[in-house]
Picture (cartoon, rainbow, N blue to C red):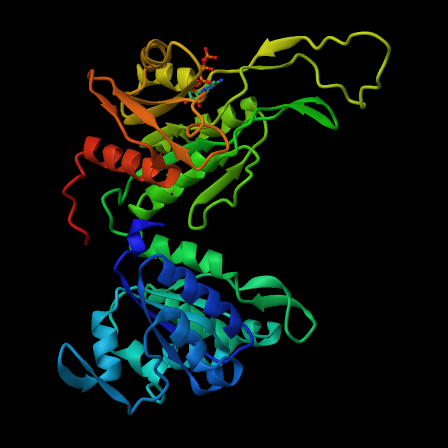
Length: 415
Ligand code: CTP
């Protein structure tokens, strides 16, 4: 679970659209991540989903009425003010055209918009409405107004709408709103203003139009690193080979397939990269030719001649001799089966890295396709740390904390 949500107070404003049912999933994910979720529903929303559903999921009272009040910190206080002043994030999902208008016009004629008026923190809106309503100049004007105040939007997506028609207006999926909630909460964190580029996944080297040479990497570690960087406020770019896990939201995604494409993408981003983390399993060899037509089977053996691919981190390490500022930090991974330490230290040196993360891929709880990793960290200055068995998320968070510390950002006060 992302630590960024732990203990955070979130207002989830739900307005009246069929997408309300998806907001139940969002409330559930936020609550499971240890956030305290206070749901405010408009009257129209209660026609789609009963307040008790959200109440059961969040274990908190659901507010629907402006004139209700309740005790908080022992004193009887007005509900919307109590909630608005305590919240770290205000999400509106779904936001109907009507609710967008109320928010943009500063109206306070029902509890959701009234609470928004008393609230000064970050706000994330996930619109949901019929295509023409979304495209209407009034709605677009309201969106522009809200954006100019620093409000964040996620979606709407295009697809099949409740009316049966296709077009823009679908609320994005709860997981995507969840990802953006983390991004918004992470803003102003210790990696604010730092551009972190991460490589992930296993590259695929084509043999013919239907076959490739690949490896067992799922990309889990790289995706966890991208989330951890984003949640510390970094501007994050994920250059990734095909992944078997969902890529994170709120991160710039650069999909590639081959080692050469990954190399080219890394080099293109290099002038603006502050921290490069190479977690991809890059193929060291590729077929000398990729056949244009599918190779047919023939009797006897078949040989594929291979050539070397570019070593991305090594190329970056060489460039750093000319421009030591880009990137300021290079972190690599060493997935080893034998002579673990010696191999890792050799790579740290050869590729001019600042830190290398060693994992023993023969251990059953570490390496490819498992959720945990037991790693040893070696740093350029000779520092070595053996970390206990952790989830890949925890390893990723610890690596990014380490990166922040190395950049002198460990005691960063959130702005
Ligand atoms: N790496 C890279 N480009 C390559 C190969 C590896 O950038 N062509 C990066 C990996 O992303 C990783 C580090 O270098 O961060 C070490 O990768 P690994 O495959 O363990 O090492 P290799 O350099 O391929 O060495 P060897 O094959 O001898 O183990």
